[in-house]
Image (cartoon, rainbow, N blue to C red; front, side, top):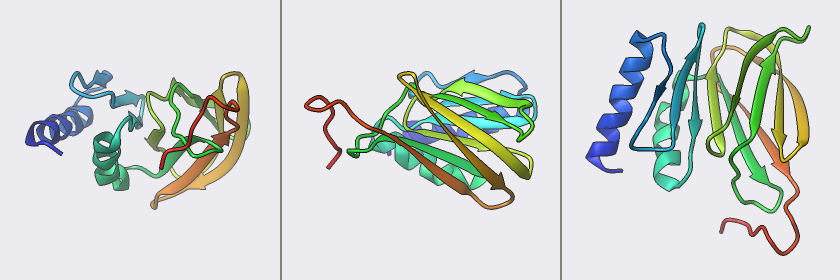
Length: 147
């Protein structure tokens, strides 16, 4: 990871803590957002971005990973997080295969939708990082796994 990328990421993390407005990183595809009390990040396109997200994942308690069943990472997944009673907490589109959020401790329903196909998972988060992987079937002859 370049020093420039590290400094941009560090500045963004500090800015998110101080700003109620969403910030978008110009130098990367990563997106750091704040929606009310919820802070989240989405990205991970390329090894360098995934490594940068890995370094900050302990700041979050929910991590979502999006792939095809054949192994390839995917992006443009619609994410909706709500309470078990259906109260919306957060909704956005993942800009890469990783979506991480810092949520108040509790139980949530996570819905991820890719190309019109939705999957739901119920999860409980607390202090530690809870990771959920969502995988969709690829198109035969089109999608190839990451090796």
